[in-house]
Image (tube, rainbow over all chains, first blue to last red; front, side, top):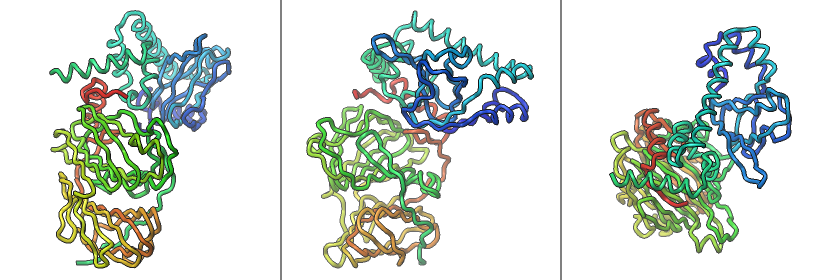
Length: 197
Length: 291
């Protein structure tokens, strides 16, 4: 749960030069959210993407029966955004909420587009991020359509090695699209397999 | 022999809840100058100063969570804690008792206010200390030492009322109840007003004292209730005099000079071992326990 600085992220992952990094970082606002605070509510318009420096957020929707479905967890070093709002400038379709005390960088979408236009290196980096995100979503859709509860769980712990210790099981179950009872069964079965060895 | 002087006097500030049953000041490593490395082998100290919990049918506490790589020492001053673990073990830590749990290679457990106590409610006061293990013992077999108050050796002082309870290590020829992996002295010092106790520990040992009740003077310096005294790593001897009836927890231990990689409930030597711990927990290698 160490702080993950945005500057460090851009320098080590994007291969951008220092002046570009500092231009992007200086255009961002850092905001502290208490656990339970909303970064974004359904129906709001936000012109920002969020980068989590410390803490943990979840992006979720609420269905017509009032049930919560978690689309994404965003721990340190993750981006989270409601594209409907940040890019398409329509009312947000999701909620983004801090589930720990969280330090967030608000990235101005317009500034990103501006930088992408002016700088091919940044455009390439931004595209890569976007494709990575699409790949992640593809995998997630495929899993939700095809995988067993255990397979979904095993994939979850690879993506998010420490989340199980940070959130209640009901949130993990919501993310996996299974019941909490089913998640308990999966974990119990896995423990059983190890005990039997 | 020379005097062990006070390096720093800390007055713990904010509190936070661990689960919903423990309202604690985090003193180690949360206070300035009290990093895990500085305080080794004492890598974490949470103090639940006296706090009233209203009666609750559902016991408050902390749900299922793992530990690996160290020991947890729970010292109950007021209130009762019930614990259960994934190997089927469990018990109650009552007032005056100490539970010394060696998590080592891994324990999955939960800790709640004891059911009958929870229903009545009351003042709760407890210390939880994490004691690091040397690399060679981090993956040893987990074990418990349930130390009831009557099994903890006591040195009665001259007024026949004041005493030093020896939880671990030695004091005035009495050996502590707990077995430890590295040299540690952990003493519960109960002094009537005006009484004094003298201590002597090797200069290199990391040494501190927490005033749980009353007020004291340490080497003549006034320390208020909840005050935490860190001693220098020079000199051996210090004295504690009660300026009001007082209870003081004294801790002193030989530092374990190895790298520390700590994250949440795991304290290992390297980042790889930490990732392994998360992985093992996720994959069920710590066993299973119902919430």
